[in-house]
Structure formats: structure tokens, C-alpha cells
Length: 333
Image (cartoon, rainbow, N blue to C red; front, side, top):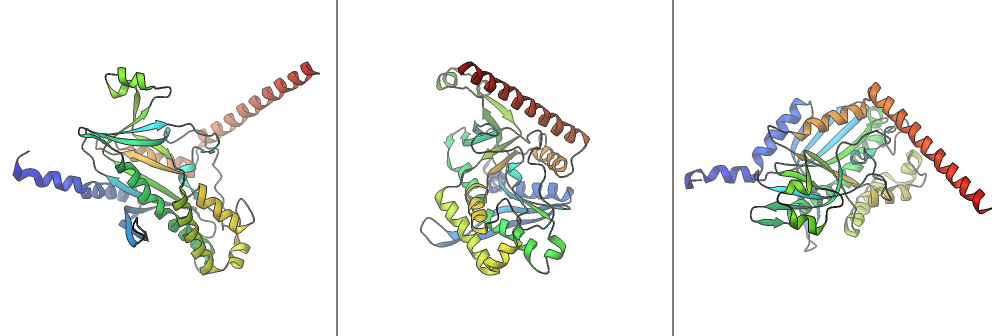
């Protein structure tokens, strides 16, 4: 690239063109979007500092209000993001729709019904690394996750505010808010194949021998102590503003105790997962993302049939397990 054309490279690396294209795409989806959502928290030096993520967008499909928290990461097309594989379910109870973070804790009516959605948006992953022609960069992905993570609690309380405020609740009580943190990147996305080993990586000639290329991934998140404490601080400010007694009366959640509910959200659901999407003109992962969201909030006949089928199969598995356990008891006796 000649010296006179370096401005193109600098402009692209700034991320502004990517942000603009993503916002244009969101506009076509009838989202209400704004550039840069800002918030304040203490930095590593313990100084109050302004942080932000790139695009705050609302996809409104009553009674669902889907808040898209988007951080854009422009990378050269040769850059690869590689993630470790994870499985849905298990001890962390990550469900296919966990990344949607439904917020209906103060609704009189209207609760999220599809935690048993029959298939995932994308494969589940955990830790990731950025690989470039210059080497590996461990900070890019973690920084994006951090920027979105610390913005989450404020967005959650914003939804709660709309559910309990005397004026706003007339319009929003019954609204299910969703906060979905999304990283949009031009980097190629890869998920390491399960059962891969150090030896298989050493012997591979190409990354696709040890990893599958994806256009979207769901990344499992576990709040560290600092994030959990920060979330609790935001929630405590919310309680102080509205009063514990008032909030306790309006609470309609998975538990009747306000402190317990907020502590669980702070530790496990703020956030639970992230969505990482590859973006290019040829392969825009956001298209599949919106198609999936539409089917979750307005399930078609096929979805209901799959839910019923999955339920029947799970009941059959439980029945067989019970029969085996009964046989073992009889054998022992």
C-alpha cells in the first residue's frame, strides 16, 4: 500500500466504517439505534472513568423489548478468533436462549416462556484468542467482553425501572426486556473441535483440521468478583432509589426475596453469555441472529412441534433410567 493510501487502512482500523454499516443494517431491521452507550466505573487506578460500547439498539416486538448491546471490532480478513468448545446444559445450566437474558422480574403478567427452545443459535464456547499474522493477541476479546459486561447491570435496572415506575409501568408492565451483549467482528470465527489435543494441533497443516469455521458463536461468561460486586452496587443504587419495600411488593420472579433475586442476577445472569458474530458482505452472521430471535419471540408451528418432541423424548429417557434403577435395586435385594 502506498503512503498516500494509508489513510484507508487507518480509517478501517478505527472501526467507524464497520459501526456505520452495522447501524445501517439495524435500521433496515427497524431497530432504534444510537452510536455509543457510555457509563462510568472505576478503572485499574481506582479512578472514575467513562467507558462505552459502540452501538445501543432496540429491537421492539411487543411484548418483547430486545436491547442489543453491540461492540464492533474491525480486523483484517486474515485475522482469526479461536474459541474453546463448551456444551449446553451441565452445571452452569446454559440453555439455548440464555444469551437473551430475559428481564421480567417485576412483571405482573408476561414471563419469558421459551427457556426450553429446541435448538441453539450457535455452538457454545468459552475462552478465546485472537490470531494474526503477527502472532496472538490475548486482550482484544477480553476487553470487548469487559466493556459489555460492566454495562449490563445498568441496562438490566433500566428495564426494571420501566416495569415498576408509576407512569411507565402503565405501558411497560408486561413487557419482557432482553439485554443481549454482542461482539460484531470482521475476523473469522473458529471453534476448536472437541477432543483436540496439543499433538493434533502440532500435526495439523491448517486451522480447519482442528477447528470448525462458524459465522456465529455463543460465549459462556462467568462473573469475576469485581464484576459481581460492581453489579451489586448498581442494584443497590436501584433499591435505594425506589425503596426496598416497594420493590419487594412488586417482585414477581423466581424467588420471593428481593435481595436473593438481585444477588443471583449479579453473579450468574449479568451477563450469562455473549454472542459473537462474523460480519462481511458475503457472510453476515446478524441475518441468522435476527431470524433466530424472531422465531424465539414468535414461535411457529415447527417450533412447538419440536418442543413437544423434545419433551416426549426426555420423558422416555427418564422412564428408562427409572426402570434401570429399579432393576438394580431388585438385583441388590
